[in-house]
Length: 350
Image 1 (cartoon, rainbow, N blue to C red):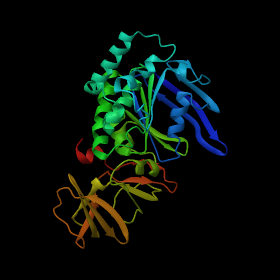
Image 2: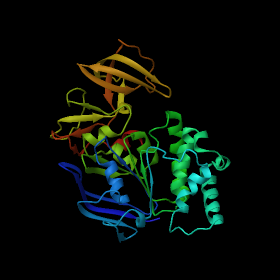
Image 3: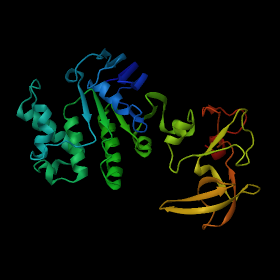
Image 4: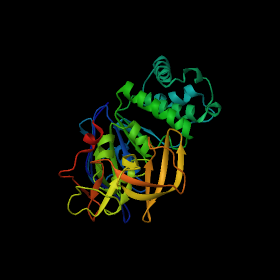
């Protein structure tokens, strides 16, 4: 595997700037996820690394070698797309062996069979090798698509929302499998998604993109707990962070210039002595969690129920915030660092 480095990479399509001077490093063996909505530049970033698009500016290095102007083949990358793109009348074995039979690979039949079976064992589809692709479930087809990339032993894996076409249960299973496979292989992986749960569970680091700009890149926990601005804060967390005017809740120690505050639903205290009055608008039972939707002076606030007891629509309560948990943002949406308030870790004893 190899390190991938993008420096000052820009790309436009006509009048649309897809990427603006992107600086990104994916370390050897690291799993980096690019997160953002449609049009943020995620797929363009992958296609530039793959050589499917040519950068207008900047440089791209793979394993220390500049490949900015190279065609795709010598870059030695493997691209896993959203759609499986399997050959329907080929067996699983032949689908996985296909890239190993390409001109220039120069592998014997025994070498091809050995590599395919090794990856099939890793993916737990060894018993499916004789099946046609049309006989597989969605999760099995995605495993074959990933296996077809793995057998090539590339320098880097590029994955473009490979789980988005699966149902919720299969996505959960495949997230676990992908992380296991990546860890077992030590594979350098650049993965793009708009799904914050995928990003949080898979990534060693998350890079948040907005309109072609890398706004923040850090560990999942750091991005979640210390977002650089409101845009980043809203990209992670379900239910989404509450963005409120400073006067909606009673808070001490807000820094000067705070135009808005952000409070995660898990940091809202229900039935808080001396807190802000609120009325319950809805109760959402989500299995392990219960989300309470509240109204305080016309402002909607989400909170997690926790140990506060039962609520029903129309009930009244009072709201507080765990010390140090509120985030302050200026008029432009940028995060303002706390000065004297207790830290979030101190509030939770971590």
